[in-house]
Amino acid sequence: MHVTVRAATSAWSAFHNVRMSPNPSVRRLKTYTGAQGYVYQYYFVGKRPALVDDPEAPATEFVFDVTSDRKLTYSVSVFLPEGPREAWRQAHARPLNDAEQYAAVKLRLFRAFDELEDVKGHGRRLSIDTGLLEEALASLGVE
Image (cartoon, rainbow, N blue to C red; front, side, top):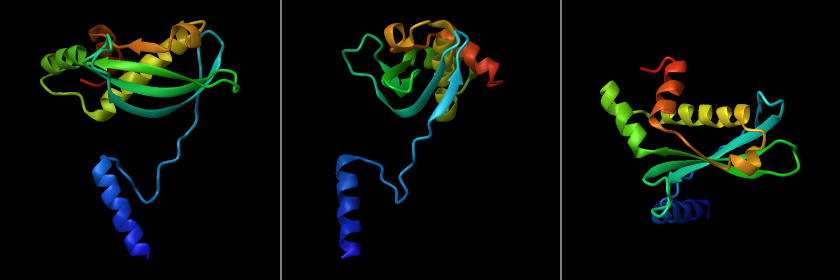
């Protein structure tokens, strides 16, 4: 019976293009204290291609769940458009890997935490332009 369940799960997973593992990852709630004095808790939900009709498209949308009061949690999307990624690739003669993309996105999220008084009201959709991408990755020593 156990073998049948695994086979069915694998077939379902392949059919729906869902990556399943025997030990699903546990979301780690992280904390960041912004320059405005707010303490944010957040976790990474996932990434996906931006919707075709989204103003940021073509881009990859990274989604985080965020709270600053431990009562209300809301989503913040950080868009990494293809234009800045392509500009970075041309300037550095290589594409960004997944870890570098995530690092740039996370630094963009932190910048919103530092600069915005009301992230929930004014920072639910963040974007990374070429300058921000270069700045973020340079601050990490990525060349």
